[in-house]
Amino acid sequence: MTTRRIRSAAAAVALAAGAAACSAPGSGGEPDGAKAAESVVIGVGTEPDTLSPLLGYGKDGNSKIFDGLLARDADMSLKPALATALPEVADDGRTYTYTLREGVTFSDGEPLTAEDVVFTYRTVLDPKTNNTARSELDAIREVRADGDDKVVFSLKYPYAPFASRTVLPIVPEHKAGGQDPNTGSFNTRPVGTGPYVLAGWSKGEKLTFKANPHYWGGTPKVKSLTMAVIADDNVRATRLRSGDLDGAVLPPNLAATFDKDRGKRLHEARSYDFRAVTLPTAGKVTGDPDIRRALDAAVDRQAMVDKILDGAGTPAYGPLPADDPWYAEGIERPHDLKGATDRLDRAGWKAGADGVRVKDGTRAAFTLFYPSGDKVRQDHALAYASDAKKAGIEVKVEGATWEVIEPRMGKDAVLAGFGSVGDPDFGLYTLLHSSLAGDGFNNMPGYRNPAVDRALDTGRRAHDDGERRTAYTALQKALVEDPGYTFLTHIDHLYVLDDRWDGLTTQLEPHEHGFASGPWWNIEDWQPKK
Image 1: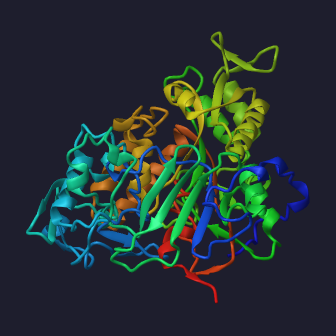
Image 2 (image 1 turned 120 degrees about the horizontal axis):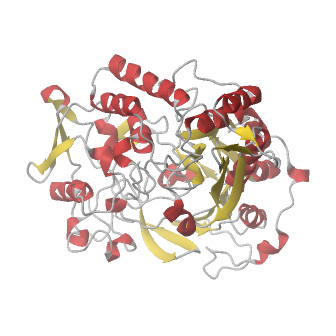
Image 3 (image 1 turned 30 degrees about the vertical axis):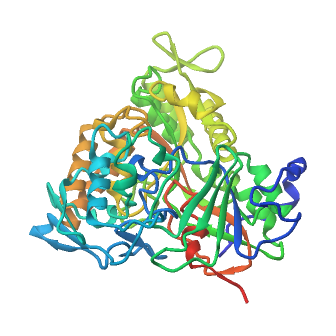
C-alpha cells in the first residue's frame, strides 16, 4: 500500500485517550492484550440495518455469509462462485444460463439448488419487498430453474452489464421462504453458503462471525471475525492503538498517525465513493438553477482534497471519478467565486444588509444536514458553507442522526455519499433517474431532467459500447448545466491493520465499505505470516 498522499499528522492529532478503557469487543474472556492467533477484530463506523440480501445486503458482492453466482477478483474481474463458470449468453444478449457448482450446502447442511436462486431473484423483484436496489435488476423478464443445477435468466432487453449483477447473494428458500422478507427473522439470523456464519449480533456494539466448516471453498484460516461498531473516528483510532482492535477504517488524518507504527500497515483503496450536497428540487433556494450553478462554481474542491482528505482523494466534477474509463473529458470546472457572484447578480439575487442575497423576498439560505459522528462529512459541510457564504449564500450546517435526516431529505440538503462499482448504470440510474425521485436514498433531491433520463435509459438498454459512451458523456455534460447535486470530492478509503496475515489486498471500492469492502474483502483467503 502506498501512503504517498497522506501527510504525516501524528503530532497534530489528539486522540480520545479515555476511550481505550472500553471493553474489547472480541476478547471472549481472553487475558488483556492476548491475541487469538485465528481471530481478527475490526473497528467500523456503522452497522447494517439487515443482513438479508433480499433487502439489499451484500448486493455488490463480498458478503461473508453468502455467495452469489459470480464474484469479483482483486482486479474486479468476474469469476465463478456458486456457478461453475461465467454464464452462457444467447439470444443476442437476452438469455443468460448458469450451471451451479455441485455439492454446495448452506451452513445449516441443506443443499443449494436452482430453486434457491430463483426464489432469491423473484423475491427481490417483488414490489412488496422493500429492496431499494430493485431497479438495478429491471432488465430481468423471467428467472427459472432448468433442473436442479441450471438457472436461466430471460431479459426484456440486452443489458450489457447483466453478469455483474449476478454477484447478488443467494438465500435458502427453505429458511427465508416462509417469512415476510421485510420483517422476518432471516434479516438478523441469516443462513448462507459463504465462508462465515453469524455467531452473534449485539446491536450498536458488534457482529461476530465464525468460520463455516462446511464452506465449499475450504475452511478459512481466520476462524473468528468480529466487526466492532464504533461510530466515533477518534475512539476507533484509540482502541486500535491500545490493541483492542486488529484493524480499523479511519479518516486520513487519523490513518496518518499510524504511518510509522511497527507491526501495523496502512492500506489505501481507490474508490467510486464521492461526497456531494443534495439540492432538493422542491426548495425555493436549492431548486433555483442559478443558485445551483453558483454553488458549483463557488466551491473549492481542491482545497477540500488537500485540507480535509490530506490528499487522499480527488476533486469530484460529477459522479464518476476522473480516472474512470466512462468519465467525460472536459467537464472539469475551476473554483470561480467571481463567476458565482456574477451569475447571482444577473439572476436578481441581490446582497442584503447582512450579506446574504435576497430575491423576491426570499433569502438565499438553506439547511445542510450531515450524519453526526462523521468527521469527514462534517468538515465537507463546513467548508461548503464557508465557500457559499463568500458568494452570499447562507448554509446552516446541522449534524443529526439518519432517523432525523431521512424524513427531511426531500426539502433539506444533505452531505451525502454515493458510488457503485462495476458499470456506470449501477450508480447513476438510482442517483439521477426521475422515476426514483424521492425513493428513499435513491435520487434524494428529487432531481428531474429529461435529457439525463434519456441518457440513463439509453445507457441501460444499449448493447453497443459506443452508444453507451455517447449517452453517459451527454449525461455528465448535462449535469454541469443543470446540477441537482454539488459534487465535492472522490474519497480514497484508508485502513490500518496489524501486519500479521498474508493475502491482504484492496479492491476498487463502492461507497459502502466496512463490512464487505476493505482489505478483508477476501479474509477467507488470508494466511498467517510465518
